[in-house]
Length: 246
Image (cartoon, rainbow, N blue to C red; front, side):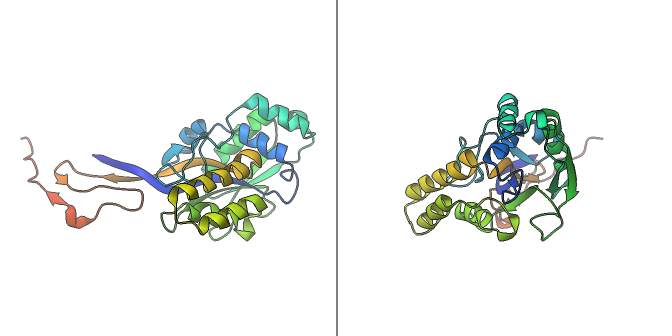
């Protein structure tokens, strides 16, 4: 039997916003609207569930929002790109996407080529690095060190080497949330921070949420998985295995 539970990890695209073309919010929004997260999940083989309209915090975590991501809208994506001065992708140089997993990056790049009419080159994002050489976008994943939403937004927002847009309003909200004990009040601040960072600024594009998986024999009981780890082994019991048919 297959046991499954939501995890505490997210795959996402970070747009390098301190240099063209992603220093223009309309270009970042165009690429976000040009991404079909549900289709990418199947083509890429992510072991989870598509983010679609979700934020950076996975569903298994407090403060998850299912309504901050920009919708998949190819027509709007092309219109925004034209407003930014690149109708049908004309005038945009070939973009470099640094991907932690090349197969994932190539699937995403193909969507952008077909929808926006641009050239995209995919390069390997090496371990320990947050941005490949000359990359304008980065496809990476983040696994929480501990099960708290602060470890998603604050950690990713402040990676200095990632060149992802840092918003003063987001920083202020994260600082305020860090000092609160009331969970509901904290969650409201995190959702507001994501609205600024993901919806308004399109600085990051959540793609997929990781899930925990475990294969269990039918005669093994008491084994389970959750967002943080597989079930403890001291709760496992093994029934007598059924005799094989002759």
